[in-house]
Amino acid sequence: MAIVVNMPRLSDTMEEGTVAAWLKKVGDKIEEGDILAEIETDKATMEFESFNEGTLLHIGVQEGETTKVDELLAIIGDEGEDISSILSGAESTSVEAKEETTEAETSTETTEAPATNATLPEGVIVVTMPRLSDTMEEGTVATWLKKVGDTVEEGDILAEIETDKATMEFESFQSGTLLEIGLQEGESAKVDALLAIIGPAGTDVSGVAANFSAVAPEKQETPKAEAKQEAPKTTAAIAQAPKKASAPAPTPVTENGRVYVSPLAKKLAEDKGINLTKIQGSGENGRIVKRDIENYEPAASAASAGKFVPTGQEDFDDVDNSQMRKAIAKALTNSKFTAPHYYLSVEFDMENAMAFRTQFNSIPDTKISYNDIVVKACALALKQHPQVNSQWFADKMRLNNHVHIGVAVAVPDGLVVPVVRFANEQTLPQIGAAVRDLAGKARNKKLTPDEMQGSTFTVSNLGMFGIDTFTSIINQPNSAILSVGNIVEKPVVKNGQIVVGHTMKLSLACDHRTVDGATGAQFLQTLKGYIENPVTMLV
Image (cartoon, rainbow, N blue to C red; front, side, top):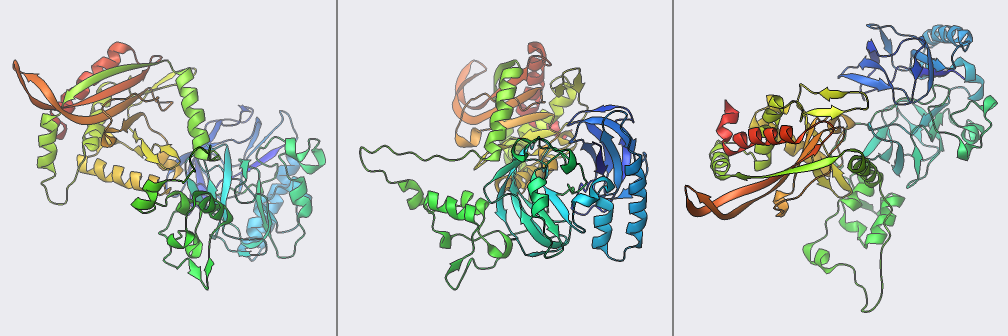
């Protein structure tokens, strides 16, 4: 059955979008994950992928044309399928919508496909699990900030959704009453599964919730528990975007002895033995949510004590794998066993770099780290060795002419890789500021999906933890990752004399499908020139 694809809301402020380019044409076969078009929003031009499979039967907005969010963008269905009724219905719906006097009515009329209007009560909107990152396949509801019966305004935060990369606030782009919650706190579901239903107060939506699946009700033959989770056949799967994070509310977490805490956060606190009254909540109205428990750092004495276990008694704690941990496991396993890794290790003299950093930081209001020097040096070296700045695909190798460097950041749930874009074009202070900003957002789970994708090379630095040398797994589809160790004071030979020196060991992991050994070695030679003589990076 045909699926109506509407203009998505790709940013929190987006009201309309322009089709910059169609990457598929009518008649083309569409696979889930294929890029349909490039959409120009109010903030950027973004690739828009399909969450469905079939044949592209109709294009509703031509290249260069602009339309409102939730207006007809395309129709996907079976090859040769008759969609004339959908097209005529969409046109009449659009005319009726323009005659409505309220924005809510307009939203409803223009976002529900005529083919299934009869299955949804008037004014009812089905909200599905959004895809909040480029690799997200399922999400977990960390916290509901609204309950059934609450009035929901456009822009209100409905819930906090834990993705494979971060916990993000999920806002509503509809107004009405929260009639149904499809997932309880702590529960997980695939992208496009039923998350909630919003509509006029008092509307009976029990049938909608019970029959919701990717297959239209009249055609559904598979039980709901076994149905393949795809975008629903109506446009009730409203495109949603994460709301920009705001600073934690200063509201006290207790009032009249009550602690405002989500059930999931309360359970985590009980498991970890954390006193909730000692935590400042960062949720709505000062509510304690999951991330507050995960980020809580007790006093040093309590932290060092650990969990008490009687002598001779076996004890363990089972911790459910987070979405981030699952994603890390999947991505790194795939990388390790599909990309033929090899490693090149070098040791650089850091005397000049240390003197350079000291002098550079003597400039007022300037502070750069050794990691900033490494990132800048890598960016410049990558421009001279595009093979190392490449990406492997099944049918081609992409040599990137831009340099976006991912910087690995450790967070409580695992590891994230925010991206410093166009690093070769930035000054050392700019790189330093960008890395500090991104690292701070990463630790507070405030990174947006755009800030975590698009890297062409990755730097992982464990030197600050006292690690001298290590190797990393490539962050695909990158072709290489650089592991940076600690600066060590040691005896070195200079001009035939043993003197005290400072060195740093680095290890380059390469994908042999794209980077040959000699190519990797040449890159490290160029990198050596920049790091051992950092003044050359200022030219």
